[in-house]
Length: 213
Figure 1 (cartoon, rainbow, N blue to C red):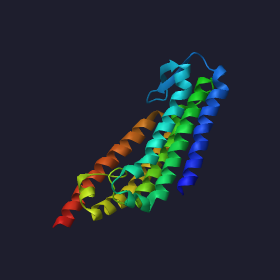
Figure 2 (cartoon, rainbow, N blue to C red):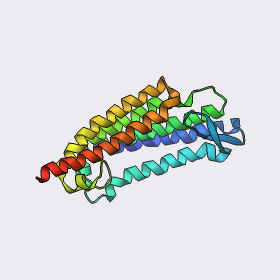
Figure 3 (tube, rainbow, N blue to C red):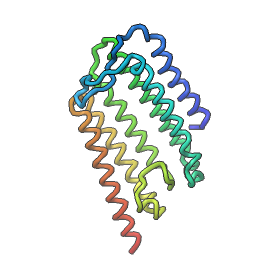
Figure 4 (cartoon, helix red, strand yellow):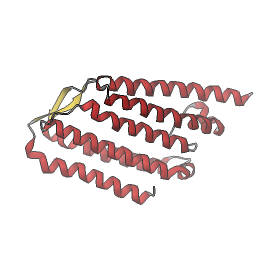
């Protein structure tokens, strides 16, 4: 995906988030649910202004940071080799944040939804997109699986990210089970990601030692 296309899509998604908040502002109570526990139950509340605009503002900040990373990395020429896939991941992140914001507004409008069940496919898409990006990522300091061993050896980087791409896609598939078992969504998501991170760190070390012989 080209930079221009990514920026246009992200701008549309951000505008959508702000537009929906402004258009429906008068429909919300003074206190809005803004945090949900692992069971998908609202357990934190904030002011209406915070509830309406926190996520859209966060969305702008996250997207600006992600778009700026390729400009800051000393190995920006390597990022340029997979920039199209990275741009795709930025768009998925933007779509995820817009979707999360809309779910939050629906909940506060009194619409009966199962937050975890509806979040499961969004988390799954994010994990799967991360897997796609990892499979293409070239060595750099800010994007990907950055262990001492992947940064020290380009072959270790390539091998770890090839495996990591598959592993994170599997994490996405596992997270989809949250649609059927919404009460266990956070365990499925965090459990699979933590296991993946630990396994890939161990793999990068083992691969480094193999190549060092």
